[in-house]
Image (cartoon, rainbow, N blue to C red):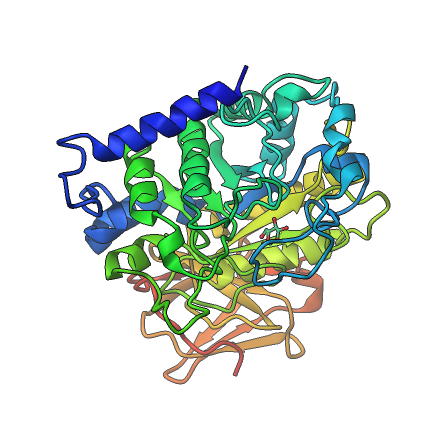
Length: 467
Ligand code: GLC
């Protein structure tokens, strides 16, 4: 019986708020924010917390749920009202019966989390982010706060648990996706929203309590007419109490008002800062080069759809690593999305493509992992990354046999093709760097050239790219 537990949890939460010591009487807003990193970290402390993420470059996003049975888009194919959403449409107020009953047939008996992790590793991915609850409100884990979860399916086993355990076993960084926006829960944005606000924080608490170390939390939008409907200070203080090193994206409060003149936006600068999170999330597009702020492009491998699309058009191998290189050289990460099938397996053609990408990365790994974007401004010609005394130029478009780049202040002492160590002719002047390599000596698509410098290029330096 889960509903009574739900009630108990709600009561406990309510009691905690009133408990002396936890919240002084009459100061209901006084939440202890002392552990929230965004509020007091030095730049060095922040970089130490964010380092694995900045080094990782490439992750796997997994949009999955009973909807895979329909082959349609997760949540968005559910034909029902979407309360107070920025994309809100006046859809029927009666929920979509078929969609909401798909879980009764969800039985992914071929789901093997270790297999998924292996696929990610072979693709050269360093972290994975799994949908735990999307906007359709279905929990892919054993939540004590709802009946609408994986335990109610014929499958009846906690997906998130298996996934988290497999990631931990393999040393894979673990990311969990949670959509605050919920079109199924009847309390979402009803009245003062207190009931829903407490409930979803309870769900986030479950996720950060029951699955061991969680490296990253990926929120996906809220809604509502004003910020006052959400207790983000309670949310963030709870999150870092449970997972002190957590990295959080920038969507915990995304799409909150202000939409009315009364709503002036986040109540305090602290709430603004916390909910801005640790990194930006350009969606279905490569982020513009930005070496000052952390970012991660999330993009779907197949058909522009997040969940499984049978026969959807898949990016080619070249397009996929083009996207990856653009992210890496622009200072960001790529979170590439796959939609597993209803059986729990990942489509063979997707696995094959990822393997090809992984094989392409291997001899170029030094130019990708642990680097930082730039200094050369990336573009159609290619881009660059750097680490220590080395700049890695990803050269795609040449002018004949020449690539003319902007001026580098540090002296270049060597230029070599990364894949075989062969010398590349390099002329350095006050006005630029000129690399010369005949077509026969280049690799297909990108030739990665390592430039050794006398001193390192400081992170954040931007030099114009092709002149
Ligand atoms: C959007 C979509 C959602 C998807 C997400 C990933 O917010 O609503 O379907 O999960 O982006 O970035």
